[in-house]
Length: 323
Image (cartoon, rainbow, N blue to C red; front, side, top):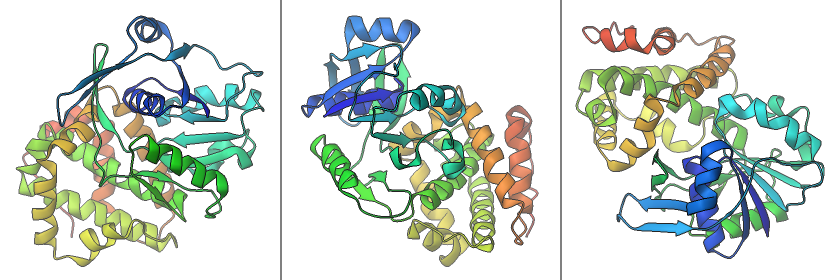
């Protein structure tokens, strides 16, 4: 399969190297110094679980032309960069499948200039950080790559994409309601990132019962607000952890989770350069939640703090939790 991966950050690099290693014909779109480095040195990965380093040569391009032919373009840019790549994708009508593995609470409204039949939403199963030219990453079989057609059907192309990722060593889950899945995933992100900012990182968050208690309350508010809009809650474990379990047990579970290596690599990189993406997805999500009949007082305060993270960090003296 001829694949173009649009985005050469952590996610794009990991998927490009894995797919190339599985025998796919992969090109990677990168620009500037990143493109220079990739051409000279290939994709350099270090598995955070094993310390194993690999180098994968890959074809690097800097622009997608209207006449370029690929079987699929996999988009791995951040949500706040998405608008900048849509014109080139719209101009190229030869690629039949555009797989967006991007945080996206806005749904198909973002893709109005594209032929929606070409669009497949999804979400990646890789986290990490790039230090210089080396991507330090982590993938777990328990955390799958999520794929889904907009209409919920399991189509032949969805099966083909799933088989391609499985061959490359990723676990895969097909979602019958991918747009709701993405919305609830964003809800988790926009709660966890401010909480980690407040405490100075995911490991420190795991040691603070007070801050995890606030996190449990804000996520609960967001889930109930989504339900108030008629949005089904998926994945199901969120309902169990935040709505069904006793609050004290949810807090213990999350404290343990935040002290794992997966949380450090999956959360902490967002506390610096990627904070702009988190702010933008938070604004999009909150615009929708304001239409809900269920109030979100703690979540509203958290989102104000997210816009001014330095002030949020200084406010550690009180939680101000509203019951």
